[in-house]
Image (cartoon, helix red, strand yellow):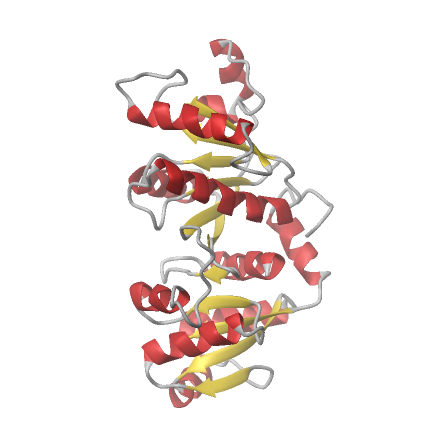
Length: 302
């Protein structure tokens, strides 16, 4: 945990580089994009790596793209599903601090994460939190959940918020200001999302959600823009200054997050939270920088 407020990705990298390196276990690591990210993270002193997978393929891919494996530990497990369980076991046993998905089906990977015997269950729902470094903003903005939970229930949203607060805390955001997004900023019985938003805000008031100031419903402009807040005459400890934006469902979270990257030229990184240790699940469509920054977030939280 850092005492300093981290306002951008450069701050995050510096904070991780000032820590003792964490150990990242990668499941099914025989992938060029994964190995390039591993080498880049090592070059920036962000983490150490244990690569679990088909070692012959790992070495072949590494040789093809010019990645050196001298400083990584290799564990041979050609079966992808078994590799996931081996990597999870390394984390649950304390041999590694962070788990990372390689070239394996996400469902198979998460099945190992949730295994009752060697998995990383905590009792909370798993959720994805994306962190954005955006032009024109003097702070990091987080969005959840645009990657895992399709239509989360009220209790699942409470878990999703608590998961995100865990990440916000290590970024120096204490307490985190959380906006429950909707199309409007008033409670409307015909719009169930607004009722859930009001309930979540009250749950935070009663201590059922810890480490955060929660308010909602708030439309996006009212969540992040003080001018919009003034025009609407909204009085709120969160409005205009939200650190974490909670989407009503996966479609809204996914569309909002991708618009920040592809339209607003933002930079993104993310983690799966709610497990006992950070879980890095990147997409092949993610940029090299997004993969590096996701590793950095995992190392910061691990």
